Image 1 (tube, rainbow, N blue to C red):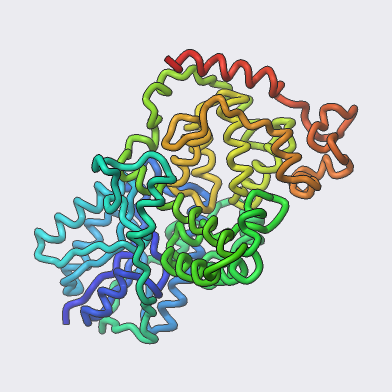
Image 2: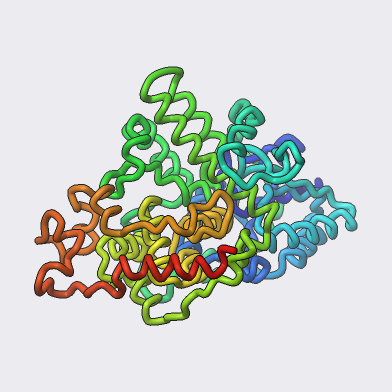
Length: 467
């Protein structure tokens, strides 16, 4: 009997899984397959933190498949060659997968689909990652959106959630399984032990995703509108890495958040704010699909001439959380320790890099790419270009975040800073946010720049390209 391959990528779940659903409905024995081919995603192959997460997510998915009488086949190498081999040896007549939207992956997938069809193999892809496809919404001029608010207004009527699809308790399996690599052979885990903080902070896999969603809906969504900007509070959903790896469906998150928010009152307003944040994720993929060059070029072309600085020492101090500005340093240390950073703090540290230090947003995007467990090319590109002022719906370049006033506003008690900058734990009041005004804070650096002076220099640099 012919088989169906479900080619798994960033959709590491069984429920609400369109490619798997199509395979189940087709009725043939199913071979769940994951291919580790990072070179095919170059130059944006997964970074170190993403690889750590991927290892544990694949481990979790393999256990879920085994509980349904199936198994996860792991391979590494050329995607086309591996598919060719399995088609020949295991009588495969169909290959199903869920779409991705990164430029290199789109090109690879097009080649794979063409090759499969030439062989007479049924090849189909599905939307398993987004609420709406990037090409399903456009302006009245039939152009892609570059401003979020009209994009989200036009998108919402197009969202069709539908009924949830649940994976059967038993999957139809082949009589003979293909050979599989051992997960450890993929070498996804670090060779030196730097991941203790990640292990303490996260539970990769479907169960971890559902726990985060339930906790958010039960305890935090009602205060989301006010608390989401407070890094000292656990106010956000923390679902970004789970969504990135497809451990939970975006449709399920949208469905449950919308239902929990209900119809009226404060909860509805807070819920709508959260749904709009999911909308920003959609917007990021819309932009990446329509403007693929933005992964390494500014959307606003005049920024190609911006006089960025090349200062490796300053860049390294920023990366290590040694800038002398407590909110910036706390954020960069949170990133290194946990593989994640609060969104408000991401904006603050990005502004500091691009405007106080005048180091290119591309340097920041590359560092985030390697250190974030939720490193997503669409979100990373949008976020950095937004802060740098060179992207879609971007904050004006002349909006320069003051890291001191931002700290006082969004970490009013100083708990976040004290947690990640223990050298400052004994400081109080304004001195916590401006430790350079206190003599002899042992172990904490002096500011690497004067913010007021850096702001004026940045604005002068902006005038060069403003024309």
